[in-house]
Structures are given as structure tokens and as C-alpha cells.
Length: 212
Image 1 (cartoon, rainbow, N blue to C red):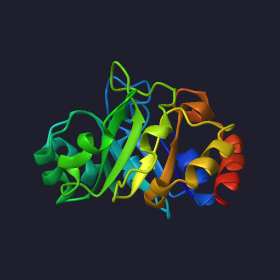
Image 2: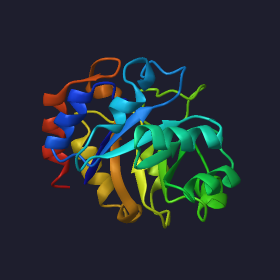
Image 3: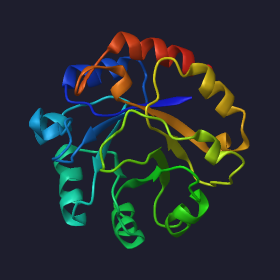
Image 4: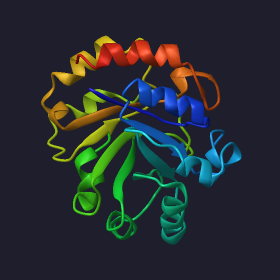
């Protein structure tokens, strides 16, 4: 199982993740976030980060042209749209760069209805916990909502996933929907402080989920 570590704010920690063969790292370009990356790193320093790890830019209701300028300035490999972006906006961005559309999932959510207009205009989905605002909650949504669904597109599983969720992930991986599970997305449960990760804790988690 692949892993995405989101909310990165330190170059040296991204380099450590790269050495752990983690596939994705996320940089948050949302000014209201406590992990807003441009409060910590310049665009040029992000662009200079090299390695196998895929640099993902996370945006919330940003202007499409501004997103594409940031992609170039920071050398991003993927874009994650985490707001209320329309299918038309997603289509414009995905014509330029691989695009992940995030959906915030609440109780009794009709997931297939929620994603249906986005299937042909983005490359991947991400399912996160519904919240009052656009930030992470550190809480999990009910993964059973996804059970038996035919998502038919690679997706990330996000929202409050922590070090103690290995067995839960193993169980989820047995469900038919997990055939399209591309990666798990982790963040706050692996932090020392906002944007500063506990690399040792991440390494233990990665060593466990890689076998799922």
C-alpha cells in the first residue's frame, strides 16, 4: 500500500521521506491552514526538492491560473483540489497536470452521486472527513460508506489515519472497493507540531502498511 504524507513544511523531512521510499508528499497552498507551506518555504526551495517522491500541491478554491503558476514555480507533480471546485475547473487543471479531486465525506453520504460529475475530468479521487471548514479534522469518517462501491478510479483514503490503524486498514483492503485504493494519506496523527513530522513514527507505519 502506498503512502502520502501531507502538510510538509521542511525540506529535510521531505528528503527523509524520499529515503523511506514514500510515494507522495503534500504541500498545502491554503493560506488559512496552519501548515501553509509558503509561510515556511519559498517556491524555489520546493522546486529544488528532487527524488522519487511525488510533490503534491494542495489547493482550496484557488484561481485556476494561480494554481498553474504555482505548479510551475514549485515544480509540482500533482495537484489536489480540496475545496468546492467545479468539474469545469478540474478539467482545466487536469489538462495541464495530474489532478486529484478531494471529497469530504459525512454520515450517510451518497458517494457515487457526489463523484459522478468528476469521473471524466480528474485523474484520481481523495476521500476525507467532512468538516465545517476546509482544514483537516484529525478524525475519521465511516469507511464502511465506501464498502462495495465501484469507484472505478484510483483514490486516496484520508482523514485522521494514525499509527494504530494498521489492522483497520488491513480489513478495509479486503473490501472490493479497495481494488482502486492507490494510497493512504496521513498527516496530523504523525506530527510533533503543525507541519513537523515524527519521522520515526512514519517509518514504523510505512513498514507495516507496505505489506498490506
